Structures are given as structure tokens and as C-alpha cells.
Amino acid sequence: MTFGSKVTVIEMMDRIVPAMDAEVSKNLRLILERKGMTILTDTKLQEIIEEDGKLRIKVEGKDDIIASKALLSIGRVPDLEGIGEVEFELDRGRIKVNEYMETSVPGIYAPGDINGTKMLAHAAFRMGEVAAENALKGNHAVAKLNLTPAAIYTLPEVAAVGLTEEQAREKYDVAIGKFNFAANGRAIASDAAQGFVKVIADKKYGEILGVHIIGPAAAELINEASSIIEMEITVEEMLKTIHGHPTYSEVMYEAFADVLGMAIHSPKKK
Ligand SMILES: Cc1cc2nc3c(=O)[nH]c(=O)nc-3n(C[C@H](O)[C@H](O)[C@H](O)COP(=O)(O)OP(=O)(O)OC[C@H]3O[C@@H](n4cnc5c(N)ncnc54)[C@H](O)[C@@H]3O)c2cc1C
Image (cartoon, rainbow, N blue to C red; front, side):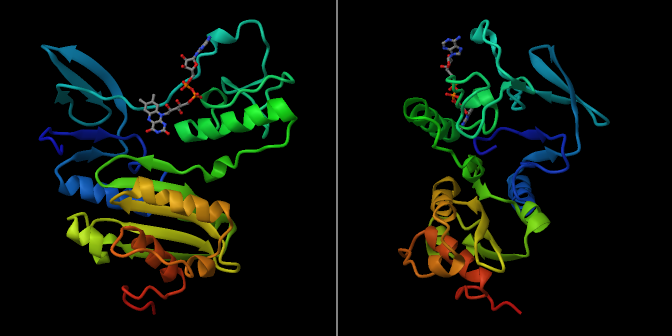
């Protein structure tokens, strides 16, 4: 699309990037459609047929799509052929591990994609560290995989850590803070003033439950949020930090301030 191709996204769920916060998903769709992408949600891919050097893409209940390329990006399955005779306890085809990354066979550890908990490179790296430490020194180290940041390298980028608003509301009385890149100096100067940072906090204690970003450098900015959540820094504590100007990170600061209705570059909350 950015390089001049006509792009159609086919998604079975009712929204794109369904694992992300619903508001982020809605905003990304809007931005991509404005750029000219066709997005079909609630649409099931049925078949891809090669035909006269092109691909006929059959979808349920809609006209066929004729394309020159198809990029299939659904699901990965473990290949356990290499494990030989060892009988591990499995969970939906993946090697089951405990919090120490140890399998049902004492002394054998299975960090990474093979256990299917978080199939991301940085999560695998941390799981590997934990497994190695436990294998050498006895089981004691754990990886907080629920705090693994995730990023999608669209234009603009999308990134998240922790709970979505929907998930947080199931358990907590939440306060939401949001700040748009449209009111950020660096984003305006860089012609990248799209998207927002959204902070989900527990109203009672100010604990940060989740941070969601759509906008420039989202995949970079999310790591600040990961550190904040891991260190159990509250909204009030975060607001004592000084963020450089002009930076995209100021949007993060202002979104935290907005949790308390204190973002100075936002209209006052009623
Ligand atoms: C197309 C694609 C894009 C991705 N993009 C991202 C991304 O942007 N960000 C991100 O965080 N993650 C991304 N991932 C996921 C990421 O690659 C994995 O989560 C990560 O590589 C998992 O690391 P791992 O060490 O568990 O497994 P792997 O990286 O798969 O390493 C397993 C290794 O074991 C070797 N092996 C397998 N069987 C045997 C055997 N019998 N004997 C010896 N060796 C064996 C394999 O050859 C391989 O080298 C992507 C994955 C794919 C497929």
C-alpha cells in the first residue's frame, strides 16, 4: 500500500489485530482504510487457487479476490519430531512447562516457542535465561510473561503491554488516560501525528494494568511502559519523572497525567 500496491486484509474476527485493545484496533483500521487499504472483517478465507499466473482468493459470502501475491499470517504449530522417545506432558500439542520452564520430565527445560505460552522472540529470550538459571542453580527464577510487550510493525506502529481495557474491567475498577500524538510537537514536526497512548490503571491504588500505543515509534515507547509495570511504579510516581522535549515519549507522560485528569495539553476532563 505504502509502495503503491493494492492491499486487501481478510480477517475472520470482527476486528483487525483482535488481541490488541479494541480502541487501538478501531483506530488502526481507520488509518489503514484512509490510506486506501481494503479491510474485510467477519470474513473467512476458504481457498486460494492459482489461475493464469494470478491467485483467486475465495472468501465466504463475498466476491472472489484476484491477487498477484498472498501473505498468509495465521497460526504456528509446534514440530516435535526432534524430541524422540522422551515422553513429555503436552498441552494442545505443545510441551507443557511450569513457571520455572521445566517440563514434566525433571531436569529437562523447554523455554521458547516450543511451550507455546508467548511465541515472541524477546519472550523466548527471557524464558531461555530463566531456564538456564534454574537448570544450573535449582528452580527459583520465573519469567513474568504476562508483561511481555507486543508490537505490530504497521505504519503507524502498534504496541501493547499488560491488560486491554476489556480485560482490566473484568477484574478492576479502572481509570483510563489517553493522549493523542496530534498534540505532540515531535509528531507534528515529523508528519507522524496519528494515534495515541492509552493507559489503563487501577483506580484504587494507581497501579498500571496496561498500556496501549498506536503511533510513531510505538514499538520503542512500549518498553518504558514495560519497565514501569515491572517495577510497580504508580501513576503518581511516573508523573515525577522528567521526559525530554520534544520527544514522542511526552505522549506517554501526558497519557499517564490524563489518568488523573492532569494532562496539560489536553482539554480538561469533566
Ligand atoms: C515470519 C515470522 C515473523 C516473526 N516476527 C517476530 C517479531 O517481529 N517479533 C518477535 O518477537 N517475534 C517474531 N516471531 C516469532 C519469533 O521468531 C519466535 O518467537 C522465536 O524465534 C522463538 O525462539 P525459540 O528459540 O523458541 O525458537 P526458534 O527461534 O524457532 O529456535 C529453535 C531452533 O531449534 C532448531 N531445531 C529444531 N529442531 C531441532 C532438532 N531436532 N535438533 C536441533 N535443533 C533443532 C531450529 O532449527 C531453530 O534454530 C516471528 C516468527 C515468524 C515465523
